[in-house]
Length: 117
Length: 115
Picture (cartoon, helix red, strand yellow):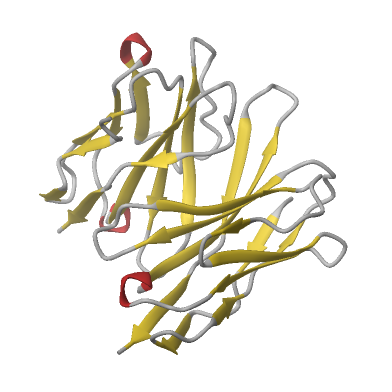
């Protein structure tokens, strides 16, 4: 069975600094997708970044980038130039397509990030 | 355009009562998911609807939980005879089935408190 592990329950970073959130997963699949979602206090989950496992190039979205190490089954999120609005819970998620054609998602337990002024 | 909406945003109920939670997906999204988020936990998958196919109910924790999706759009999650351990935030998400079906769009959730 697939699992997703986020080993950092809480982290903090000074405004304008860089922070890296870790995520590891366990799967025997070769084709899958990985995601980072952000959940601010408003509870609205927002997609931050996604990575297709077949792509070797790390995904980047403005200040957000990932370090995808497929062999090590690691998918860390780097936030550069942290802003106060980045304060939120961050969830790492794994998705694979099942034989039935449906999708299975597994989420980690989250990392609570606080950006300090 | 409008995102995923959920109602009510908060619900307080007494143990043993039934509750209904509603999800309105993004128009045109054929896939719909329900998750439960307990305090300090990640998202626990409950049920998945994909078009007219039979739903994937493998995540429902007990037979007190059920969900339906009428007309391929609005979905209702029903919890019968609620228990205190049912207290959680219930999140709904939807996605398309072509292009980028892998990406889910979430609603703001319903916070359920069972007293």
